[in-house]
Image 1 (cartoon, rainbow, N blue to C red):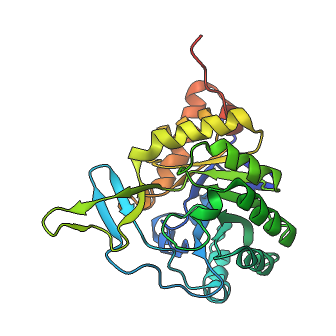
Image 2 (image 1 turned 45 degrees about the vertical axis):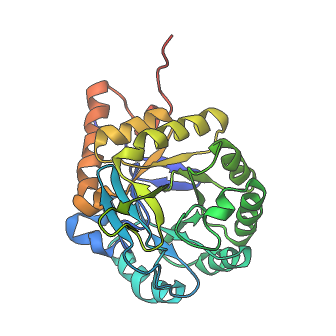
Length: 306
């Protein structure tokens, strides 16, 4: 039996459930030497703003025993350069492209969505209302359900593209924000962005990051992400993309069983670029070994204790 790995995130069809997370694979082109991008579910390019952004000052990445702490601050080339220089190359490589984007206000989000709508080679959008490393927009929108609803609704009216909304774990109850985004027209949710953290250089007595606080990613946050995926899956019928510490096919399957329809690989791309090839193959092997015909049949099939 050859299992069917194809999944759907609302109107977005993917050949398999494995995606590369925004901010960890550049514009996707950097990953091309490590595998066939057309064999991926999708590439989520780094967060775009209307104008180029230099991001935060260094130091902005530090390794900890528990994972990577970053405060990049969404450095990017801006929308115009992405459309002119990056997107045509991704099209030639056959990649399915999901554009992660952010703004400092509702109008920014709306304009970005409108200008990306219809761009050849853009298969979907992922709204970032969850980055902990920028002063405006981002996290502050993602922690307020009323503001989250307003900005998602504004973007929904501006684009016909499939719309994913990336949520923050830095809230009391992620289901409240998830429902606000779903009610405003999101086609799918991405859970989770990084957890806020902090590290200190005890010799200099300074914060390890110039901005003091950053976002923690890697395997340490996977149990938190799996829990949030499961909670939202129990509360809402909307498709979910699990993100947070996926290192192996087993990790990906854990997310699928919790209720995710697809997964994103993030921090692993820095240490094992090309790991997605093994994860896609590993999901197929698991399906064959368990006699499951389709990856979609695993979604939410967690067996609770009696």
